[in-house]
Length: 361
Ligand SMILES: [Zn+2]
Ligand SMILES: [Zn+2]
Image (cartoon, rainbow, N blue to C red; front, side, top):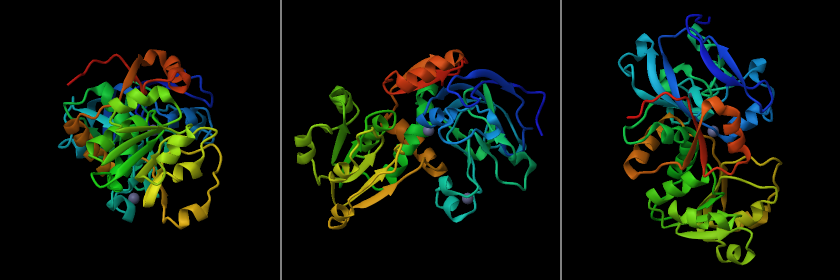
């Protein structure tokens, strides 16, 4: 059931990275829904993989990507009237829906719910409610309707442009660092200083980790990594510095990969009984030397996104500790140039599109 009285204008992919202007009528506003007039949307690597068709065919062949959405509430269903006022500044991340009752949802791990629905290029799965069906369209548009339980109020201290990347890059790095206890008793390594890694360095500093080690293939990132909170920088192409750092990190986040990323060498950085968390999906499966992990009791794990609880905590924590993404903003009317910049323009460190709607706090 679509609402022909409302039209959202967005930038859609039909399987190529070249986006086209495309409009749609959203589903009818359900009692649990919130309608958002979008002011900003960040560009994430997942958007690019999806619109290129690298992660499988598009749902219904046409996709409006974008899952770092910020805007203002312009309408809400009856069940959301107490929670949201018209004009509230809000955000939406990668997840638009989950069952909220299963063992994962009740532990704050909505990303593992069998009924989890991504906020773009997905289909709502909770069938008992006619308003919770249909395809999801994301934030590369001027508006969106989303279940209000997955809409988050943005603290006044955080600008809308800076809030956008917090919704995915921010929560995806905050959640595993918080879960694995990054803090004064741990030396924390961050491999890959890009969209995710530049957030992870800042969280680790704000958690007061014993040491914050930036590990990068590029020496150009040395000064910026220090500004972002690194107490130490290791060039992963420099065998001697990698050797010196071996066995020194109780927690290592792997936020990116390259064609020559050596995972065995990365794991050698982890201290005995320490933990390595994989956040990025390499193009090919990786091979690991189990014997080198076994004697040192290395925990190898992985993490996807942040759940609702983590997103709320992350927003408050970012406001309090002044953690902000470094961004380059571009108009959404120039969406293809913005995508190109995010793909191969070496942004420092995240591209955020704005629709021209002014609504700063
Ligand atoms: Zn993302
Ligand atoms: Zn669930």
